[in-house]
Image (cartoon, rainbow, N blue to C red; front, side, top):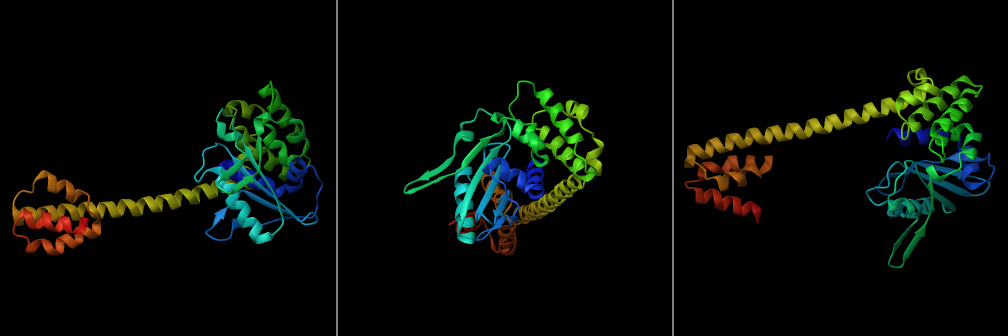
Amino acid sequence: MTYDNTLKYLVEQYPEDFVRYLLASEATDIQILKTELNQEPIRADSVTFLQTANQILHLEFQTLPASTPPLPLRMLDYWVRLYRQYNCDIEQVVIFLKPTTSEAVFVDQFTARNTSHRYRVIRIWEQDPEPLLLSPGLLPLATLARTDSPQSLLQQVAVQVSMIEEEATKQSISVCTQLLAGLVFEPELIRQFLRREDMRESAIYQEILEEGLQEGRQRGIEQGIEQGIEQGRQSELRLVIRLLTRRLGSINSQLQSRLQELSLAQLEDLGEVLLDFVSEADLMNWLNTIEN
């Protein structure tokens, strides 16, 4: 999530840099489009519209090749939705960020019976860093590029960052550089070349932090609801077993195991009818009924 947000920020703030790097063209008539596409909502990483060329540049950033659904199917899904919505040329690029030997990072198409769809794949660790060092918006990606001396490359990026004149821009690029460099460098080394103080002061870092907090809160709420439901189910289960024991005597282990699998709603239903039971056979028949 952190790396996605960092790169989305860079593309939205410096779309010309990415267009120049990936399409080898200059464009100033750029429009940032909504990344939530029609139908059942799915969200792309970046969707940029080049108005004069009537072309869309769609980017997906991946730290790992694993994806659900599989990345090739996702890219086809994105393309269909974008084409249906905008009806123009679409250039799709997947940028893998973290070095891996997985064969999945070499897959550049979706194939199925009667269907084939291709897209570009960039393994950033194989790329020449020089073009990335020329534009502020690409400097953070340069830390992940090909090099025989990673530390020297990180130092070179840090120098380029320090030469940015506008202070707010320098601060934001510094933060993005530190976040992406964390994929391949130890924190101690990053701190040698880039100011850690930029993190706390940067608007983009605060946005990422707030989004992470909101996601954490939402997960906490969801977990709390799930835990509350389970606690209620366990309480109802204990009550039902006590009532059954009082009504029928001891319950054999097989029936107790089946009771453990009942949902809260099923336990509540059982609590309403168990006073009519006169033997374990009645309980067994009731369990068989709800399982059929």
